[in-house]
Structures are given as C-alpha cells and as structure tokens.
Amino acid sequence: MLAFYYEKSFEGILCAVFDAFKLKKMPECLLATGQIEPLLVTDRHYVEFREFKYERVRVALLKKLSKTALRQLMYVWLSELPDSDLIIFRYICKVFKTTKSIETDFADPDVLTVREIAKKVSNERHRILEFIRFNAIKNPLKKPYEQVSDDNENDESEKIYFSIIGPIYNVLPLVLTFFKERFADQKWAIYDEKRQYGYVYDLNSIEQVSLIDKDDLIINSQVNQNYLTEDEALFQTMWLRYCNAITIKERINPKLQRQHMPSRFWRYLPEMKLAVKEHNGI
Image 1 (cartoon, one colour):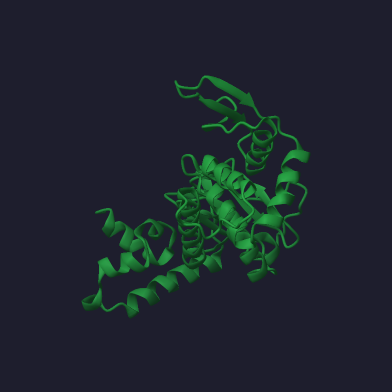
Image 2 (image 1 turned 120 degrees about the horizontal axis):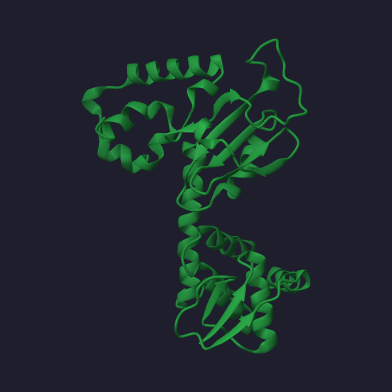
C-alpha cells in the first residue's frame, strides 16, 4: 500500500498529482506530514511542495475542466470531510487520464461524490447568507496605532459590525466576496467559532484574523453585551419586542420552523434568544 505524505492544502494536492504522474504511481492514501499512517502502508513517498508543480497542474485543469467543476473541487476541499483530499486527488487524476470530460459521468463514484459533497457545501453557504446576523460593537480589532475618538462611542470610525457563525463546513471563505460588495462602506468582521478564525474588512481589504480574548468577546455564541454600542443594544431590544408582538402563539409550529431555520443557527440570532432558552429547557 503506497502512501503519499503532502502539505495539507489544496495546492499540496496538486503537487501530489504532479508527483503521481511523474513517478507513474498512484497512492492508496494521502497523509498530512506527521499524520499517523495506516498499518497496511508498505511504501511511502514524500511530496515536495513546489510552486511550479501546482501551477502546472492548475493551468492544465483550467483547460480541462469547466468553472463549475473547478468550483466543486474547491467546495469538496472546504468540506473538511474525511478522505476529501483523496477524492479530489482521484478526480483530478481521472481528468488527465482521459480525453473526454468526466464532469457528468455520474456512474463514476468519485464524480458522483464530488457533486454530492459540493451541493451540501453550497447549501451551507446559502444558509450562512440567510441567517448571519451582525452586531454593531466597539471595535476590539482596532490596531494600537489608531487613535481613539473621545467624542462618541457610537462614532462610525470606532465601531465594527461583528458576526459569529459556526457552519458545518468551512464556508466562510465562500461568503467574503458577497459581504464585501454588499457592505462596501462599512467595517465588518465574521468569526467562525468552530474553527476559531475569521476575516475582517477595513474598507480597503479583507484580512484573516484570530481572536486572542475570544472568551471575553463571545459568550455562549453571542456577543458580550458589554461590547455592544448603545444604539445596537436599543435596536436589539426593539427588534425582540417587535418579533414578540407580531407572533401569533396559536400558529407557532416548531417542527416547520426547524425545517426552514435549523435549530443549530438559533443561538446566533438575537430574535431567537427566547426560543433557545425553551429549546434548552431553561
């Protein structure tokens, strides 16, 4: 059993494809550097990460696959499912082994699996776009050299719109372009508490960040009330009152509600605070 050790990244997979065709050997498993190997491994190859390798494979893929297929491969990678890297590897190898397109060959298990996983990731992306909620907070990501205004804590320059998510798949990179175009004139940050990283937009560019004191900013998947601006706290109170006022208790259908809005998103929505307490039996 041949195992390829590679740098665990999408570019690393492309390097593994390059080595596989160069050596004319196809591995039965792909392992990240330092990962414990299966007992049946008898032969090993360590893939050297080089830019010219993945660039050559990437350029060839652009010629062989449609944009839809390329997007599906990226979605499979972001799914972070077990063996997703091996599925991508086998798919790409099959692309180069034939002159015909395999994109619609759903009799092939790898092609079908790529399509099914990509669809699940795409659905999760749409759910994030639907259920994400931003909170106007006093900017905890302010850089040390930036001056702090003493005039008003609600000054636009001193606040940022912050959101917390925890998707099943790593779809945060897939929604950044949408929010950059949608909120181009506002500072915002989205944090994935499940993977403990996020992105911040400062009106110029988007940068990846991590929160050192996240336990202070985030409490039970909600923004610490002490960080909310005065206006935000007022708006949330008004929003809750509005939701309660228009609710017709006789028409409450929890089962249907969970179908349209999965309960795993409730803890991130201000309007669902009461529902979360009832769901948890508090």
